[in-house]
Length: 625
Image (tube, rainbow, N blue to C red; front, side, top):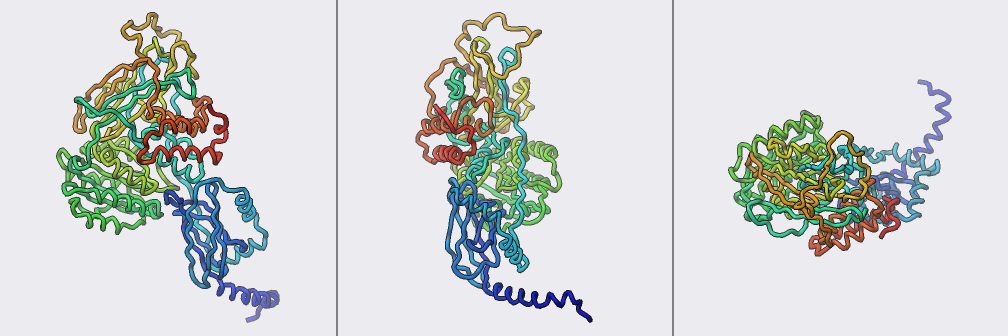
């Protein structure tokens, strides 16, 4: 066989290249590890990891993992940068032919200018460095897997002002979901501004516990109201309507028939998904009593019963079943939901808490895949008397819109778990409300007094609005209120004599109120009505009370709820935020912090300060009152 002359001329060069490459391979090692948030422990995706002086660089992928092959053996310096975090630099020892593990926990904060400049220099590497990286790749270095963000959120059209003369009634369903706040906290702690539609202001407000008077009387919850000046538009009124359900000690809860419906599909493999899920549910298992029962249903390519209904006294057996779970396959969500409800029905406890707890990233993609189809399935299954709790996990492909719909239509609630601290809050501290429903199909209807109010807008609850006639229709589904749950709704009200912003013109042909309401109603701003059903009831009950038009010094809780609402409006770029700034939000929140035994309000203040200091809302950080 003859070798072409052109190839013969290349052989010496090829021999030299191989000779040079052989010792390089013999004197290199691999560096791998995980990048996490120093406070929450959550993985950080997109952090730049570099071996100084070598041109070797990569980015952390799903789960915060990174890997750099062919790092020169010996003492090396690793640098980790991520916008929104303080840069870290560490000396490590790379062992030839071995893997060195170097994990980093980053603190949130501004990235210093020279770190940004260094990253730009790395991105604009010299041709020689590019060639070195290419050679490393040929020698076996695999780049970090591509990261695709497919998270989805339902569109929210913010409530606008309405004229009382044309729309005297405002009707909506309560919402005890808290997922939005934990989710936007995750974005902000990563130094990123959350998507506008991820910001549901009512869920932000209701994330925080509030102090209320004791619940007395025949109803399982009380209604409280306050009136103040709107901080962002002082000539407007701000009305707080609060519902507070009575608290029940964990030991006094009725027996529970629980079915853990757990997503173990391939999309759940990262540390912030299935591994965190198992730790979270282990916390709940520790709280089970002998009269409680738990079954575990999983779904991936198919649905299956991992653990039949088992008494809570057999904690080790339940915990062992959880620990054995592994992720893999596609997501047969519809089949899993059907099987979970079937198991719940077979083990139904009369007078008990019968509930499916679904834990997933929401990535249903086999079987009942469309949102509408999944909602119809859930609506059908809720007739069994089994309630639903939905827990969202993970980043990157979180299907927030789908999980929220499932919870809303399944007589349930929705929370997002971004770490063990949040898991403890949802499954232990708030277990009564998470697991025990005291009132279902809870609706509010507000009637505004045209002698006092010219216009109004409901802050948040955009996806919970109801037709006025739905209030008296007991067939219409609405939100559920659990033990110890608190629900806060804020109305911004425009007094008579003040122009209503962004409102439609007065109607030409519709009758206008020629005479003011009777004098007996003269001091009333609005009238609040609440309808609800008992958990096993079919006919609604009614509460009603007037709200006096008296502006008073706000309670600590009212100040704090107002701060949270203001922050939500700024995150949404709301045209109704007036001249409110992040400095104003911090000031309001500090005055509304109160005792804060769990530190939730303090964390909120730090989150707003970080948003301000990182310049995520630059147009709103200057000024302040």
